[in-house]
Length: 524
Image (tube, rainbow, N blue to C red; front, side, top):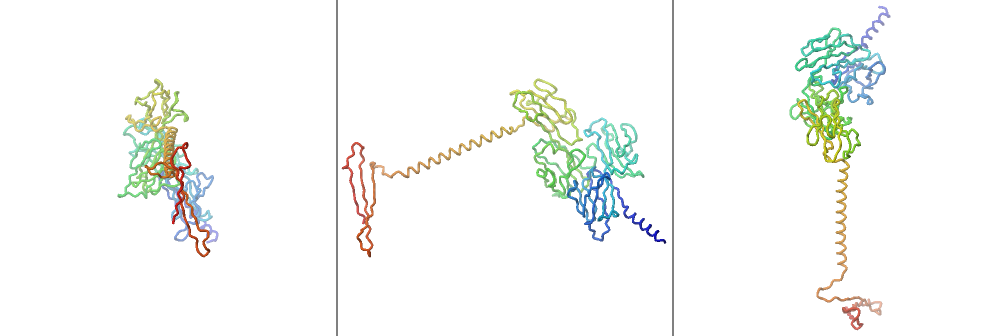
């Protein structure tokens, strides 16, 4: 065989090795493992492995360098490298779609490429209510690399019985597929076509991936859903039902947060709150794996998913809504007697709409305020916001309550304006008054103690006198007299005398020098 033919055969075999390509299909929220086959001896070392991400073949991004995730990556918290150098992407989103290249060293001939596609399904109108019996349009999209087109009719729709929906039929209409997007418009009727499935099929008509749209908005099979309503400043506990034996273990539990149905954020991984979360200081996990959010804010509203072992079939979803009320002009003074407009808003996940007239106003007597009346005007509700304009008059309608009600007109949550708690400036006044009173009491106590001590000291300086003795002025002088002529060898004897001058008690007009007498006493 000619040398040229041997070289050609070798090159063809080598091309087959470096031509390794994989196609993966995922739904949002799932985990993806992208393979990487290294040529190093066992045990494998990933110190020479690089992972490169390219979405539109315009700019390549290095996600892994020398076997370690690049910390500057916006997805660093969701990426990891297995011992076999595979790249793991947790909690996949539509933004993760594209092609990923595993490369050993700097040799592009070792490249191993994985094409990741993500299939999503949702109402084309984010505020569409899946429980209302009217037309709703569903959008099914396959996100891939820009250079991977979708063949015509690769995306199809089936109902819950498995029957494919084609063109226009009884209660539905399938719009023509455009690129990698397909639309289905259906008439929502109770008990009919309650579940719709979008499928992506290959050239052999085999289903590569599918996603469901069901009334629970999750698009997945799970344990159920919960709806919670809170006011700003309250605490909330989001339930999570685990399958483990008692006591439960949360080491396999993750909590996902989704505000607008576009991107999910992992708040808890392996039962531990992620320190990188902007809300880490307000989040905690209980012993039963429930998620606790302290001091709720409007920004906390959205969808929370408890997932075990990365299995979407275990998902338990909680929808948290937050009701707020405030003056539409933040600097409005609630005590001024003029017009004021109050704004009441229900913050929820973006694709959970508010039914018309689900937000209502009542005065302090409990009477509902409708349209326009004496001293008030209710503006038409827009999405999840309602406005009330009132004339602030002393003693009249001093308190206004905004309520959110369900279809049975039951109040799910309500909030008042002004709030039950005193305004902050009043709190400061109260605190200042209390502090001032305490200071005054302390000063008075100090003065009393000082006066008592002063009196005690003054009494101690006065001479002691027997009660039955007449008052007299006595002066005692002690004189030490030593014999100055004592011999040097003999110590002089010390003599001590006491001289007393006694003056009888008389008035100054009758004083007589003869009344003075002296007494000299020699102390031996």
